Image (cartoon, rainbow, N blue to C red; front, side, top):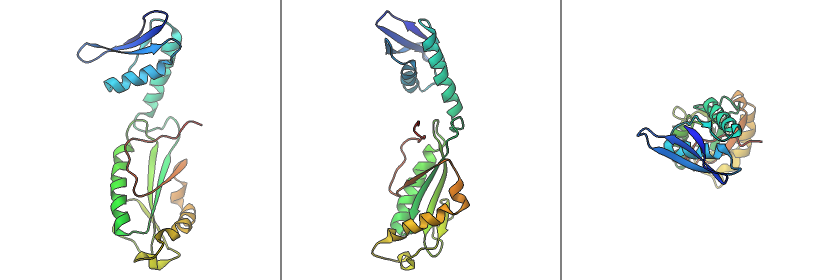
Length: 196
């Protein structure tokens, strides 16, 4: 696997695949090797390890990208970032249906390479536990409006108070970042904290 100098204008990063065929992506002059590495990685579903035939900078950049990816594989431990996902609910059947779907997709992406998703909490503002307590990681807090357990005009009215109460629990101390989302979200890919 190596970057080939194909002239002054462009470079290619080429890798032999499992069938022995060369797979290449073009790297424009002055282009970043890390972008080419990303393209090849996606194209082949592998982790390229390459040397540069035309300059040490490309090889060094590629090695740094590969090393960073190796540290992040399956965990994001290298960055130290830990995302704690928080979703609020009053435990209504509709929100529980949405929560099941969203939490199911969260579990599918949280351990993928590059993910910094570590903790998940459903914040239940209700007078008693509901059906999802044993299924989804849940912290229950007493609501300001108990009638919303059954029905009320504005069921999210308890959300701000619930979040304040949750922030006073040990659960809120998990992770370096909190991501508050809605129950109707669906996870398609892992999430990492954007660079500062």
